[in-house]
Each structure stands twice: as structure tokens, then as C-alpha cells.
Image 1 (tube, rainbow, N blue to C red):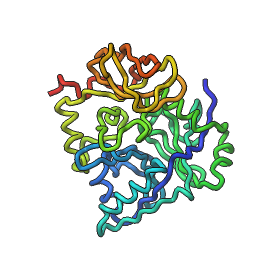
Image 2: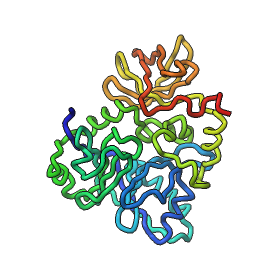
Image 3: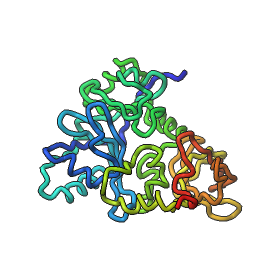
Image 4: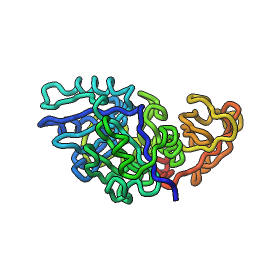
Length: 307
């Protein structure tokens, strides 16, 4: 059993999206089905280039007559600019309210119960402490995210029986599950969704119809074009800096992404790994890396044999 904790995430910000046409507006832009976001359900989605390469990912949660978007604080101005560029005359209201709302992660045994949620249902959402809480839509084991009024957020979380933790504690938790963290793990205008776990982690809806970047995303899935995967690694030695080349027998096998302690993520070429377990002998900088396959990962997704 692990202690139930919360961490305020200072690197996350919040946009509000409302207006008469906000759902139809988003539906043609992002990778997931906006219509699945309702008072009982949140979602995780990506915003891509027209060529299908990664630009932003975020959580969408219900709030009143609109939506709250939980995204990377440093990159929200860019996302807001892009959304406004596509808004044209749509009846959509967009605002950056990071000074009003705070994002928190609740994790450990009992996190979902503390927020009044069913912890077995990824994406389950409910009002909480003047805002909204939802089980992580990617993976229920990741815990709960909460978007709360900034003033009083910590008092509300402590009042729900959670102990304070740091953002670094949560970072270690998500790395232990092999979950990516936005542009720390996905390269802007280069990464593709299926290399990065978006299929298995419920970040793409295959039945929703067209959205920006859909053609490449669908082609990658149905033609078996994946050559690399973002995989968790255990690190023996000093953690390599993001971007450090990873070697297998002297040949370049990938590139390091984010890390914390002896855990990290790396983008690895599948040809250098066991096709079923994702294991292999790798090195980066002065460290030895041991990739491993989390339970949620499907290594068959996008393989060349799928034609």
C-alpha cells in the first residue's frame, strides 16, 4: 500500500474553451472525440501539424457549459495562438486562466476515492472542490488529476485526506508507469502519435472522422509503419541528458528523453530490441539503459507485419 498524496504541478496551465460552437470547433482539430467529454468523463488528446506531427497534448475536462484544458504552461500561449488562428468566425470563447486555476495530481492508494471517483475507470470525472477531478484518461493506475481554483487548492486537497508531495514525486510516479510528459518526451513537429503510446493510452479516436493530421496517423496504424517506440528504461549510472544518443553495439539505437532518478523514457528503434519484451543492451553517455515493456504497451501496434 502506498500513501495517498497530492502534488500541485507548476508546469501545467489551464485554458477555458466555451461558446456555442466549441465542440464542433475542437472536433475538427484534435485527435480524440470531443463529444466523449461529458459531466462524467474526461479525455486526453493531441493537436498536430497538418502533416500529422506532434505539437501539443492536453487533458480535456468538463466544467459548466464548456471545457477546461490542462496543458503545458510554458506552451499554452502557442496553443492558444493556434486555436485562435483556426477559430475564424466560430462562436468559441478561448482564454488562458492559469492564474485562476491550478492543476494537481493525486496518486497512491485511495487517490480516486478521495476525489469521489471510481478508480478503475480511466477518464471518470466528477465535480471536486469547486473544480473538477478525473481519473487519468491514459491509465487508471496513474491516479487522478484535479483542476481547482488556485486560491485554496492545497487546503482543499489536504482536507480530502491527501498528504502533500512534490512535482518531482509525481514525475517519478509517471515514469514508473512509462507515461510520456508532453514536449519533454515528444519532439515538436517530428514525433508521431503511435510511436508515443497514444493508441494504447486512449489519446486517439479511430472513428471520429477527420481532424488535422489524421491522414498520417491513420496510415501509420493501418500500414504498419512504426520503426521506433517511446519506451521506459531503467538507468544504471548517471542519467543521460535529454537528446543523448543511445547506442547498441556501437550503432545508434535511439535518443534519451526525460528522466528522474534511475527511471526514464527513451525513443528506441525496435530493430535493436526483443520484439516481444522490448529488452536489449543499450548505453547512453556513461550509463547503461535497460528498456522494459509496461503492461499497457502493445508492441504489435504498427508493426511491419500489419498490412
